[in-house]
Image 1 (cartoon, rainbow, N blue to C red):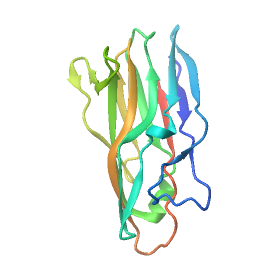
Image 2 (tube, helix red, strand yellow; image 1 turned 180 degrees about the vertical axis):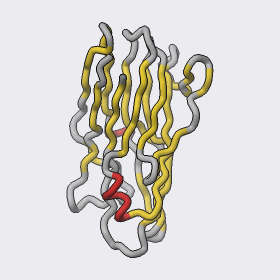
Image 3 (cartoon, one colour; image 1 turned 135 degrees about the horizontal axis):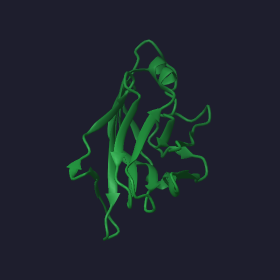
Image 4 (cartoon, rainbow, N blue to C red; image 1 turned 30 degrees about the horizontal axis):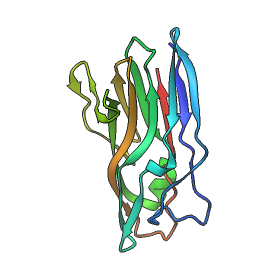
Length: 176
């Protein structure tokens, strides 16, 4: 099996404040297609219009609303795939934040053009969190389906000893 990866192009100019209430800025839509065995899988970055949003309270504490990160097209894969979501700029976030907790959600596209919580072999995928101390989450997904990986919300606390702008989180996803 091959491993494919895609970097979420969340970017922020130096003047953009991660703590603002506006949407995150994303690079143009990107996708990657690779061979897993003899069948293709596609991972796409979610549209910026459905990205998580961030707000601050009193300049020290803030929240992250839910929003989509990646879409996975495994419709032509008959086997299970193993996906890992990484927070790649943990050191920079750790310098500015004393605490960061992001709840990760995985959803399956159903036949009614909607989304439902994903299961693996009949069991719900357990709740997963990305933190400054655990900067990746992994899960298995069944083939012949479409999925989306989201942030279901989160919180952060700015370090009291810094006035630095908190950088935007950077994510990377791999699939085996």
